[in-house]
Length: 249
Image (cartoon, rainbow, N blue to C red; front, side, top):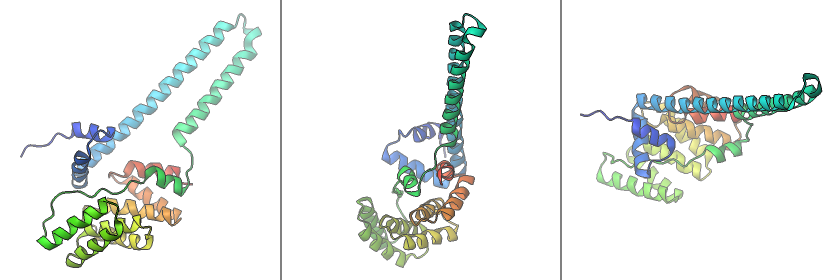
């Protein structure tokens, strides 16, 4: 079997240039391929470093321009010394403020974080190996889910779970439908079941949405601890989790 070169797809994924179908395929590959998750995480970190390097280069250039302008204006050292210090102090102040904004960020409320980082879960559309009736119920449940009819979707997902109680994909989707319906205690229970099972491809998603549940229920310390755990492990939510930990009050 020919090995896939993911470099092209990684760049498109990070740049947000993938179509919905291509993105769904790539997310499925991420779930199953730890090396790919690590490569995506490394590329994102590299981009962040390069951005910060560009900012530092710009600040150094501005500093040089201001220094040359101050020197050009000064006929003698004694006559223009106060003006030079005024500009230098102003520039230093701008640099400090810029550094604080760029490298520290501002604290955000739980509501602000949810608005900034929350995205509805997009379930993979690959075929499932199941009996005809269960597969039909799951497919219909997905249609209701994608149409944001979460009540009907939850009913069908629960029906599927009755036949396949260890189907962690269905358990996760039940949790997400309850999350969308603001039924956070029920959602937490589903996400916890997926996490406790461990031997499935949906643990990362379950941890992420459980942490979001904690934000919604103002259990900020629990949310921060879980986001911190997510940020320490390679996964599709790693970078966002690290940013949230920095942003949380």
